[in-house]
Image 1 (cartoon, rainbow, N blue to C red):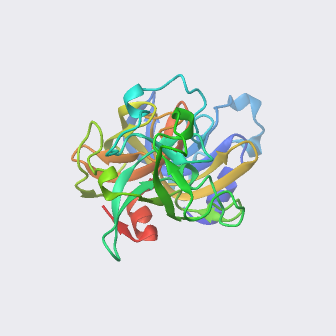
Image 2: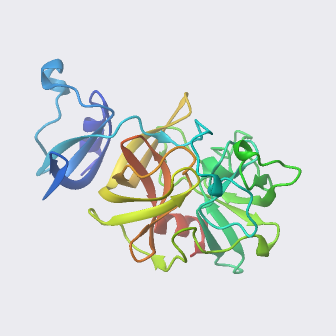
Length: 303
């Protein structure tokens, strides 16, 4: 789909994004290729003016309007809704547990990755987990900042729970600038303080390209081990970052709902433990991922 077509759809009421997938009828996938038009909530046609209605076809493909709810970058909103094992201090810490920049609440330790320059083992998660949603100019975070495990909202304290220092992050840019990833790295203070096996899943085997219909799973700080299915790829979408920021992301992956606040940073894998994406946003109806290969490439690391 060309840029003009995307923008014309996203400009419509309630529309927050578009992607490529299959048409669904009654929640069941038909296998017919379609442009999925993502909306906060569906509105009856009789409540819309003619120019506000999603066209039945676009660029030679049928369209399908999918309700995805209020999509936003996850943060911990209800600390009582947790799985205790994932919010406790752990040494060595495994991917799946609570972690976060000392000025944030908490997210998830996604994976152990390795610097392509020197082989250093590093912690992978989101910018908004490890770098406080920084755009690189706002002083929200700086290289060398303390990373806590568990995160601050899970009783992580700078005096005794610093596991790593912020090593690198990709700036998050406000619209109209475009984002492709929400990712960051932290370097452990001691290599023996982290381990690569993801809780409940095991070791990551490799990276793989997402496919619509692929079954996936993750382990996260809040909801633990959950499963989902990829609904759309090549997703362009607007995501809320707090109450005052809206960020545009392109080339993302949309799955069924498999996460909640605090699961940001989780590594999402297919059934053979091949990494598909890095979880960073969602709602009570859907989950959004960065394609993992894009994350690895931009950070210059490997699994």
